[in-house]
Image (cartoon, rainbow, N blue to C red; front, side):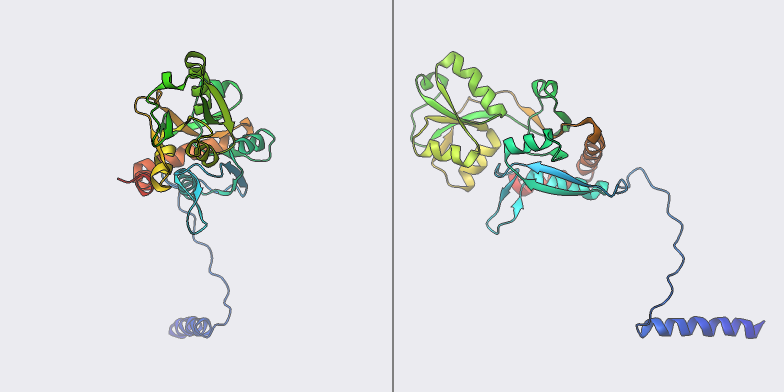
Amino acid sequence: MKRKLLATITAAAMALGLMACGEAAAPAPAAPAAEESAEAPAASTGKKWIIATDTSFKPFEYTDDSGNFVGIDVDILAAVAEDQGFDYDLQSLGWDASIAACQAGQADGMIAGASITDERKSSGWIFSDGYYDANQSMAVEASSTIAGFDDLKGQSVAVKTGTMSASYAEELSKEHDFTVTYFEDSPTMYQAVVGGQVAACFDDTPIMAANIKDGNLSMKLVEGSGNEPAAYGFAIFNKDNQKLVDMFNAGLAHLKENGKYDEILAKYLGE
C-alpha cells in the first residue's frame, strides 16, 4: 500500500517537473460548469453583430484627438456587449447610411442617439428601452440678435436630414414662416451657422452644447427654444434580430444597477 502511494506521489512530482521545464502536459479534466446565476452574462452565440452608428454626434459618437472613435453610445454598447457576452463590429457610417444599412440587412442594429417616437415605430423601427433623455432646441451665431422663433421669419435654418430636430423645425416653419435647409451631419451644419449661410440650426440640445463648449464654436443656444424630451434607444429593423434588443435591454439594466451607466455619462458630460 505504501509502495503504491509512493509511486503515485513520484509520478505526480515528475509531471510537475515536466511542466516547470516547459514540457507539454495532458490537460486536466474540465471542472463541472457552475450553474449560471441570474446576473451572469448571456453566453455568446458565436455571431458577430454588425452595429451601425453616426460619424459625428458628440458626445455620443465622435473621433477624439488621438483618432479613437469614442462617445456615450460607443461606451454603452461596449459595456453592454461585455455584460451580455456578445461580439459586435461597430461601423461608423453616418445617420442616413446607418438607417439604410439596417433596412437593407447589411447591419443588424443601430445606436446613434436615435429618439424613440411612435412615428418611427410605425415605420418599422424596433427600439430598446431608452438609455438617455434628450430634447431638441435652436442655436444661432454668438452675436445674433435672434431671440425666438418669431425672429426667423423669412430666414433659412439648418437641420440634419431625417432627425427629430428636422421634424421639430419643419413643424415650426409652418407657423413662423422660415425655410428649412438640410445637411448630412452636425459639424457641417454648425459651420453654416457660424459662417452666416443660415440664421440658425436645430439639433439635439446636449449635442450642440457639447460642440459649442469643446469646439469653441461661435454659437449660442436660444433660451426657451427646446421641445419636450424623448429617450434615445438602440434600434433594429428586422424582428429576427429581437435577441439583440433583448440583450441590450438586459445589459443596460445591469449597467444602471452596478453604477457603470453613471460612470459613462459622467465621463462625457461631467458630474
